[in-house]
Length: 330
Figure 1 (cartoon, rainbow, N blue to C red):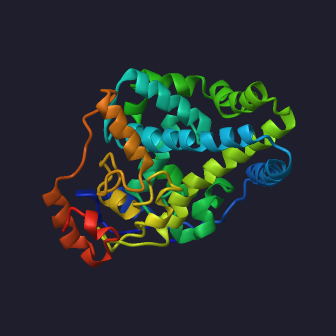
Figure 2: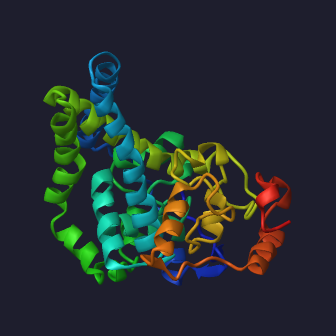
């Protein structure tokens, strides 16, 4: 797949210039290389999840199932309100107790440490839907959803990834601590505690707890995040920028924990709400609002109403607004 040669494009209201080195780099044929270890790991996780569903239906205690379901929004906070909006986009600021809480939530969802998560996502925004995008939708729905984790990175992802500055993340001692002790922290937060809790509170068997509260919960949380990379770059509306692949997909917004307004997010990436509709279908935004009320979250960033309208008129399609009654454009 050829590398994009455009010399200039927009990300939100910022213009990103591709340097001469990028444009002169020769296009090298790329051959996909499968990482079979990852393939077998994910096959096992999904097979174990199916077994977990069987156990949940026929053998598990209701308390165990409720605990597993309760872990999903906590995982969602770790990736959405934490890694995505706080550390990656710096869309708001958080005091130490909230940062610690979100870091632990991020350990629960096990999607790489905050530094790596931020690097990959900033790369995705800067080179969205090109060969330098880690989960480039132009390589197919399956690739954008999970396939990118099953093969070696495209050379452009490796090359451009080295140019992404994430030093600000490690300046936060909370993120630096997580990176240093990531393996024991995810072992504790993602598996040990979730498996122990139903055993301690409801007398659940270790077998049921491992497959339901450990593996099944984890795999569901992964797909909740992966949908942003696949479905939200495929189906939906493009009211803010009709020239890009990301879409607004309210039907999937709750499953994505509020990240379903993706056309908006790629147009205004520094908005803490990732949507112009506030709390509507956006649990992570509701959480941030709650934290702001008690003084834990502050400096919440969002574009002005005038900037939003101008951008829609310049690049968008105002007729595609899904929630016109709540829109700042009307």
